[in-house]
Structures are given as structure tokens and as C-alpha cells.
Length: 198
Image (tube, rainbow, N blue to C red; front, side):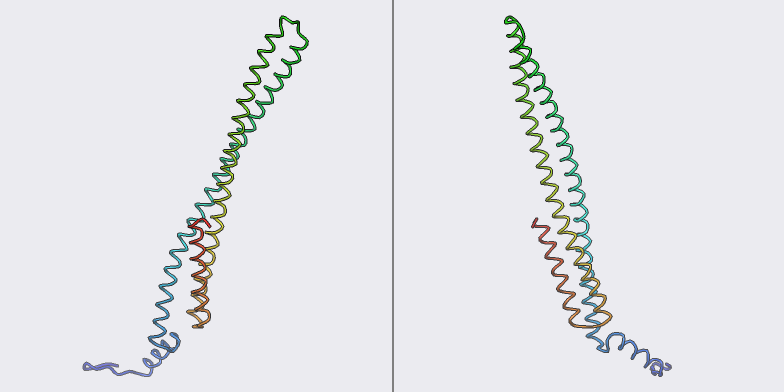
């Protein structure tokens, strides 16, 4: 009750204040400081975790795109090798025709054979170049997938750290607080490794 500019605590007010201190771990200012510290830690870790999660998604999308590019190049290379085989078949037929043809027609068949040989070499060179491009895309895809896993690991460890923060707020256990900070640091380290492409 209050009156005339002064305040008198009733039994109910005293119980509310006591309950508030108990909820804060009975430590008053120290408990508020811990709560603020954990709230700040959680906010920072959650923000960093969101960035890591974005990077995990982006690298996974890149890996899929690069794998698709590799598949396209493999198809193009396969087409080139089929073209090479067709030219080889034509060359073999021209060689057989040359060997069976009368002498005056052999020169014409030999010209075809020479043309097919040159075309085959050009086709083979193009097929090998396209195959190499496909392997490059495959390698890039594998690298992106590795980074995706690293970002995902970092995100997961940061989520565990946030969960530990909630448990620390409820239990006020010092070992759990250290575990919370340790997992946060591990998550950050994994994120740095992903950023450095390790």
C-alpha cells in the first residue's frame, strides 16, 4: 500500500520479489548479467548461423549446377565420339573400296580416306577437349559439395550451441555454459574453414 508519498511493502510484494530472485537463480545482478551475456551470445551465434545456412544452401545449389554442366559436357563428348566412330566406319569402307576398286579409282578413294583421317583427328581433339571440360565441372561440383558439408557442419554445431544456451538459462550450470561457448567456437571455426575452402 502506498499513501502520502511513501510506499509500504505488503507480504504479497515481498513474495513477488523473492520469487523473482529465485527465478533469476537467487543471484540478483549476477543472474541478470549471465542472462544478458547468454542473450547476446545467442543473438550473435544465431545471426552467424543464418549466414552459414545461406552459404550451405548456395554451395549446394552451385554443386548441382556444376554437376549438371558436367553431364551436359559428357553428353556432348559422347556425341563427338559417336561422330568419330561414324567417320571411322566410313574410312574403313573407303579403305575396303579402295582395295577392291580398279587402279584408276583408287586415288579417289584414297582422297576420301585422307579426308576422313583428318576429320577424325579434329573430332577426336574436340571430344577430348569437351571431356576435359566435363571433368573440370565435375571437380568444381565436388569442391562445392565439400564446402556445402563444411557450412552445414558449422550451422549444425551453432544450433547445438544455441540449444545449450537455453539449457544454461534454465539450469545455471557452469559446465554447460562452457560447453555452450566451446560449441559456439567450434561452429565458428568450421565456418572459417569453409570460408577458406578447407
